Image (cartoon, rainbow, N blue to C red; front, side, top):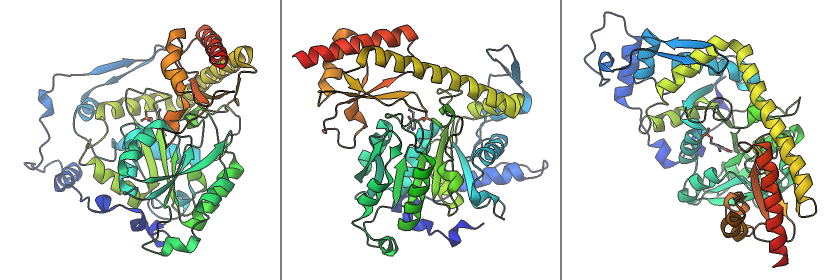
Length: 433
Ligand code: PMP
C-alpha cells in the first residue's frame, strides 16, 4: 500500500528535515554490500576489521545458557553497519511488530505495505530525531499533561507551544483533546499558513509519570480525532511489555489504517537499558527522514548491541522472548502491589493515587500540599527518601503541582515500606508547619 496516496507527509516535515540529503558514501556502502564477491572495493572508508583486537565473545545468560559471537557475526558486531539496523535484527523486529500489532498498513498489498522500521539508540534517540523532523519554532504540539521529562527537555529548545491535554488515570481525555482543537476546524489542516497542530505525542501505557494506560475506547476516539484533524500520532510506548492486565488495549499502530502513527518501542525495560536499543515503526517516508538524520549523527545503532540481541532472539525463539517478558512483567507487577500496600499502610488520608495497570510508576497527590517542589527537593533528603517532584513533568516548570512520582522499579519491599513511612512523616511535618 502506497501511504503517500492518502497522506501528504511533506506537510509535517520541518525545513531542516526536508533539507537532509542521503549520504553519497553510505550509498556506496550499500552498493558494496550488495555487489558480487569479485568486486574490488577501493571506495569506502570502513576500517580494516582484521586489525581489531577482539576475536570472539561468549555471552552467558543467568539461566546458564550461552551463545557465541564468532566469525561473520563478530565482524558485523565490530564494523559499521547499515543505518536502518543490523539486517537480520530488522527482519526479526518487523516480524515482531506484525505479530504484536498486525498494522493494517502492513497487511495491505505492497512490498512493505508502506510501513518501515529503524533501529535507534534507545527510543529517546528516535523521539529526538522525530521531533527534529516534525517540530519547528512556533508549532503547536498536543501532549499529555503531565508527561515524560525527557520529552519535554527534547521539545523545549525547539521553541514549540505546548497544548497540554488533560489526562486522568486512563490517560489522555478525548473530550479535552477535542476542546484543545476547538479553536481550529478540520479544514484548517489543508491551509498552508494555518497554525493547526500537526502532531499529538502520547505515552499510551504505564505513562511516565502517571502510570496511566489508555483504554481501547479512548484510543479509538483519539485516533478518530487524529483522522479528523489530520494529526500524526507519536506513540511512545516503552512500557508496552510491562502491561499487567490479561487483555491490554490494542496499540495505535494496530488501528492505523491511514499511516499516521509513528510508534516508538524500547528494549530498555525488558532486556537492558545500557545496550541502547529501541526501534521506530511507521510510514516509510517518515522513517527515511529519521534515517537521514542518523546518517549524520550516530550513523547507526551500536552493531555490537544489535548483533547480541539478534543472537539472543535467535537462540530463544518466540517462546524464549515471551518467557522473558513474562518474567519481567511478573516482577514489576508484584513490586506494584507491594508499593500499593505500602501506600495504603502509610499514606491513607495523606495522599491519593490510582493503582497503575502498566509501567513502573505510582503518581501520588499529596493532600493539602499545593507545591511539592521544595518539599521533595529540599526537605525530603533530611528524611533520607528520594522521590521525583511533579513539576518536572509539566511543560511549564513554574506551575505548581501537588503530585510526586514514586518508582517501584529498584527498591526492595522493605525499602518501599520504609520509604513511604518516611514520606508520611515528611507530609505530616509539612502540614503541621
Ligand atoms: N519514553 C518514555 C516515556 C520513557 O519513560 C523513557 C525512559 N525513561 C524513554 C522514552 C527513553 O527510553 P530509552 O531507554 O528507550 O531511550
